[in-house]
Image 1 (cartoon, one colour):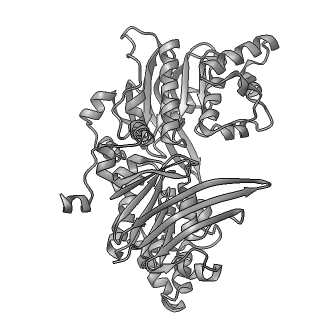
Image 2 (cartoon, one colour):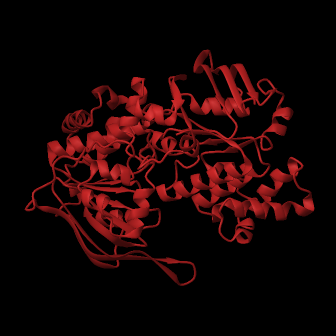
Image 3 (cartoon, rainbow, N blue to C red):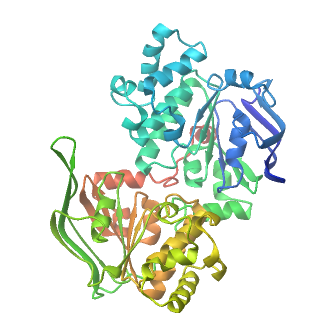
Length: 524
């Protein structure tokens, strides 16, 4: 039997002005019927260019060479109209960002029905019924209601399920899932990937999973393809690569993946008599929504953090963790309870999830870092900026760069340097590594642990990812529905979680307690 997908000697070059850049060089692999193959690597490794080359979605500036076959059919070099007949019918795509992949002004059910009509899988009169069936199969609750809604009325997980319904609607031979859950909470991520696997198994489809998270790949793939610098550096059965990686880059990916690594980064915890630098007692925050309705985002929450300690607050989106952090930072008011974070407003530094959106693109790094130091003489500010750049392991040369000239990890380091400018006693970090590749994520986490070790600063770490929390924190508070449902030392919470929700979060960690895939079990 022919492979579902056969890629041979694929190269992709991008032309920008007079510069020709190779993004992919000489890549070759196959995907067998019913198989899940994961392509893993950091941003810039070439994995998404490979996926887009297969499905014919590269920009006009791209040039490709090599051969791509779908079953017995060569599809590289096909005319756009011929490719359109294949996309959706024989190859389904689940993209990374459902916000841009769905038509914002068209009902989501109609978008699924449109795929069926375009490829002749349903008549106009029956497309509605079949689309409802696909929305149900994709795991959407109340599919009739969801059918009539616009994309912005759905959650991220619901929108991703709509994309799965669209990708599976015509029973394609191959599903390309390009970072399909990278923006989702770990529990939602697990449910989405479970649905994708189940749908593919029912249809007999193969999956090409594109991801930067080797923990996700470890859970889901029969085989791994590891890419770096536009080339495949290692490939083989998942279990073999995880237990005996041959390439240094693969070993680094595995070591840096928090779901697979056992390394603890946090320094020794503070003594019991270490001073408390932040305390919240029975705080609550309620928001008005709609006509007279009210939502309790935080309800009767109490917590404290000591000098030299990292307290993590974990939970899914909407659990109240970010609102709690903003109250402690003085960025959000509270309706009840008390907050004590020191005598100075500058005793608290805040680092946001997306550092780029919090930086003025017209300023240099030096100007961004020195923003909190207004009133300090210029000479003193220059010296402090140099000191802070050194503290976050950036060369002094970065002071002259604009934010656009920095990588994601470098921007986050600049954000941390800015938050440290006023010598705070408490640093609050709201999902500071969730948007970063695992290797860059590991660098930022090591930086935070080192800063705490050297300066004795307290950290309040907000995250939905217990794998990261296990590496960086001393204590963890688990939030759900605006309340803390469990709190304790990290080791105790992970070893013997008391609350069912905590157990769900731990079970959803990618790469946590990996079980063999069905194929591995069958061949064991």
